[in-house]
Amino acid sequence: MSEHFDVHGGARLVGEVEVVGAKNSVLKLMAAALLAEGTTTITNCPQILDVPLMADVLRSVGCEVVLDGDTAKITTPSELSHRADSPAMGKLRASVCVLGPLVGRLKQAVVALPGGDAIGSRPLDMHQNGLRALGATSTIEHGCVVATADHLKGAQIWLDFPSVGATENILMAAVLAEGTTVIDNAAREPEIVDICVMLNQMGAKIEGAGTSTLTVHGVTELHPTEHRVIGDRIVGATWAFAAAMTRGDLTVKGVNPHHLDLVLEKLRMAGAEITTFDESGFRVVQHDRPKAVDFVTLPYPGFATDLQPFAVALSAVSEGTSMITENVYEARFRFIEEMVRLGADARTDGHHAVVRGVEKLSSAPVWASDIRAGAGLVLAGLCADGVTEIWDVFHIDRGYPYFVENLNRLGARVERVVGAAERC
Figure: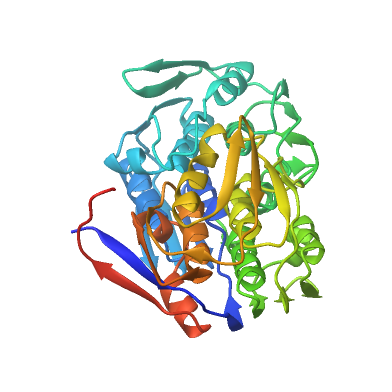
């Protein structure tokens, strides 16, 4: 039977919430463990559905993976399989990040094409072109990426777009390549810095983390390490938007506020009072109805596309009219169809959306199309009259550990219900 959330409207969220490790980092760190024989330990892992899925992917190539609370121990054998075709691959976009480590260490890989969120196309052209520049051949055959190389040699690589996934795969292949690789127009996200830190702990030689140019001096081997995952800035931002939308008062711990500088500035513009605590967290207090603010999604340090649903949800209850521009994933505006069910006054035109704020939304059954859309609908439901049913909540569970429990502890009333529904 499927599950849904019953979200009771009218809540004001107040209190303190702890953010755990970043989903967009931990899965890539787990893949990086393939690069070194032995046991790598990763701590501060979020207890979300995607972590055991990635564990299954690693087991499919021969690793032993033990998950214990917020700790993952990955034991990589001397003899790995180059075929990553676990059924979990079809449920997980990030599963393709095993491609780079397998090519780097084994000089061959057969990796099933990934699944995951329905937010638009995410082609693997840049991943493949990067591997080809390093000396590999790469094709798509029978639903898999197939890559082989006699040896890998450093190269100058330019990315047409600062893709996080492509940067990570090329980086993890290049650390064991002969000579020096330079990746220009590389992604700059904090999660990229996190994987560079871990790889350097393993013996890699990477310079420029956090800038648009990564320089990788190849080494002959890496060794296991222990690494703590950075706090999840997307989850931290979710709670920041929750405070603003419900006119609440939330202190968010466990995430570096400087990873959210633009987000917190946008919420200041909406009328929130923001206090930051060094690198450990922040507080958001919203006394009055938020004011309308415009948002434009861009690669980091721009406004993250993952946060676009929350920008739409905030705009839907703000005073005034907002323009939201989506520059990364074309299908992310599917979320707006569900917001309209809740009474939002929103229109889309290409990659722009115009949202005219209303005093209060109205409850309705809605469906989550991805992790962030699902969480955005929960926040919208908190600002609606009556009880909002949110379906396909398995998406939310993939990105937010103990989401319902945290919401209820902060003053919301949200219930997880087992049952079936038909889309109306």
